[in-house]
Image (tube, rainbow over all chains, first blue to last red; front, side, top):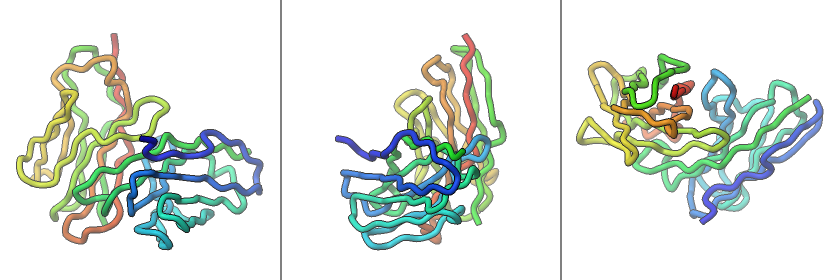
Length: 115
Length: 115
């Protein structure tokens, strides 16, 4: 059982380049989330989705876009990368509302460096 | 809006000694409370959660946390730590009344086990 899989695991970008991070889950979860983790800042929610075809902004959405064309996949895009987007990105999924009576499953993370 | 405060960014403790990781949340309304653990170079895993009922909740690896509504706290404790407990621990909260789709994480506490 793969759970939540993120690709790639590492990436180095030059300022201004674009890229897409892929999150795939095989648990038939409705809810999916993208977080970024920075030293001393904890986890901050970028965008989330409550079902196929829906997305919503989180705490720090600027500079990112997302799409949920298929239930099992949640893509995070950076159109023009900036050094401030250097971070570790985590995807998570849950069966129902994240905060409700359920467990959130996290991917292993993507370490992105923008130079 | 909900917020979570983890009072210690790092906690060093000797192996086999007891430990307490502190967590306070902002709202006095009904909440769900969680502790997640992140081992080095991994994603987050649910350690334990409080939804309702008994205010003392336990994990399978010896950790426990007590929900204290009057003090708006959910401190994590273990009577005797092991080197394998070295990790970063995140307290998290979501709003039960409004069933907000988002869960708010604290900034994390890094637990260092000293030999």
